[in-house]
Amino acid sequence: MIFWAALTKLADTNFTMPLAALLAVWLASARAWKPFFQWSFLFGSGIFLVVATKVAYVGWGLGIAAVDFKGFSGHAMRAATLAPPVAYFLTQGQAFRVRQIGVLLGVGFAIAICISRLVLGVHSVSEAISGLLLGLVISFSFIVLCNPRTVITSNPRLLAIGLIALLPVLTVKPAPTSDWIEKTAIHLAGEEHAEEIKTRAGTQH
Image 1 (cartoon, rainbow, N blue to C red):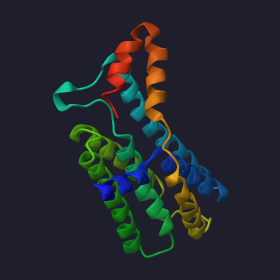
Image 2: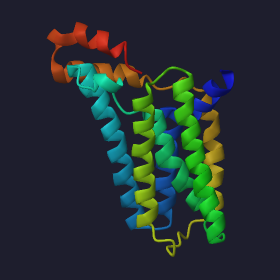
Image 3: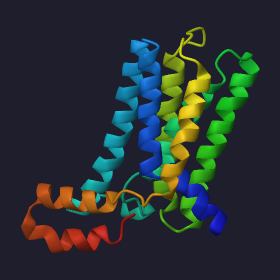
Image 4: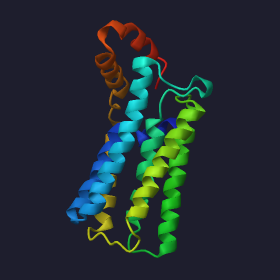
């Protein structure tokens, strides 16, 4: 259980959001504006969908009770969105086979994060798997848009160094995203529904 708890932290908001920003900055530093805007839009869209489904449930009880779905797993989505592209760019300049293996390892990492959410009992199967699939659709859409022949002039080592430099944030207490979602739901649904919202928020992770 300790292993899964430690693993799942690698997809916490306080680590993955800066990593997504790092990738965007790395692309911008190479003046790769098309990939930069594609990444920003796709990653931002994924985050929006995760938040929207969570707020919809907490605020109005909108979900799919039959499969215990209360919102996409943010951890699974962020891991699946980030890991394959990061691996793809870290292996830039390597043989195509090496890049394939790198991307597959990224997918494997995302699957492991998905499993960790289930082992820890944080999400239902539908929430974890849907989050994983959403992230994979986003990441592979981005990789496909980044034609394999496209060369980003920024050194992949800089991306690797930035990734390593971010590791200490894993020791920081995770951002209170659940509280933010609850407050957003109360703001949108109205203070008169605050008690219902707080009750539903207590059943969601």
